Image 1 (cartoon, one colour):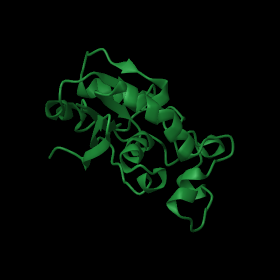
Image 2 (tube, helix red, strand yellow; image 1 turned 135 degrees about the vertical axis):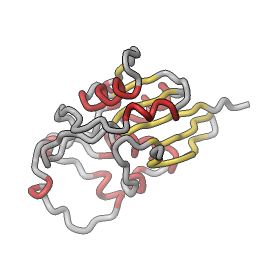
Image 3 (tube, helix red, strand yellow; image 1 turned 30 degrees about the horizontal axis):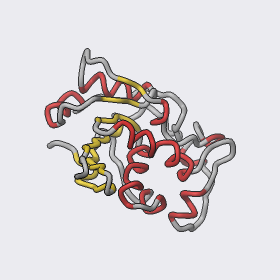
Image 4 (cartoon, rainbow, N blue to C red; image 1 turned 45 degrees about the vertical axis):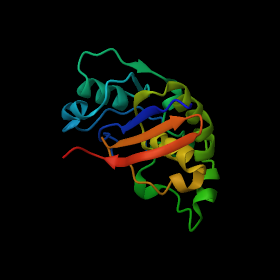
Length: 182
């Protein structure tokens, strides 16, 4: 009989990114509005964050005073030379399908495929858990459930949204995406 483990992925609160791409650039949150109420809707599971300040601040707002582990494998995609570039100055990549986009490696960075190769073993090893991380980390989990990396880039992942996955020996399933308590 297969054991089913819940994996709750939460994207950090809105980042104070200054209008520029931030993957590995460590920025604070812009606001924690709504974060404190989120904990009441979540199961009692171990909590792990990306080491990013925005993730740690989000976790502390949801669970004040609680000891929370960090895992460096949960960092956002490394956008390399594009990290810190204002959104309106990022290169126009033109039309490309999701699999081609997922394989694109920014100069001195990593592709989304490479990020998934880093993140997915961590998600498997950490389940059951609540993970506070990045949109890319959430999409990496969705890629596991979909069995394909490219289509996971189609998911919008709002700040402070919850994605609930289930992990078992038989595979992954998606219970809910982009959920926020109202």
